[in-house]
Length: 119
Image (cartoon, rainbow, N blue to C red):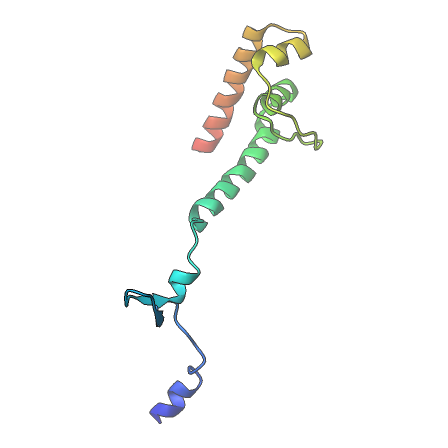
């Protein structure tokens, strides 16, 4: 009876099961061979937060705030335009307004986004 139970498991291999030994006699496992520096949890969290950010930008910010944030941080806007990150001075020159006004709009927009993330 016992052999019937384990028969279907004979092809299964655990990641932590030793498969060989290295030159110093330490056991090697599949986990050692296929290890990766990628942290899946952090990668997933970053992706989720990025999606939230794009959603919040389109929902919370008005047109001018959205344009300034997208140009300032190199974010693609809702029309698919991808911007290179720009300085406040460059954006101000492009829009024909003062750099200090860009700074105030940027600060207000970031506060809106931060408040939405905190909810």
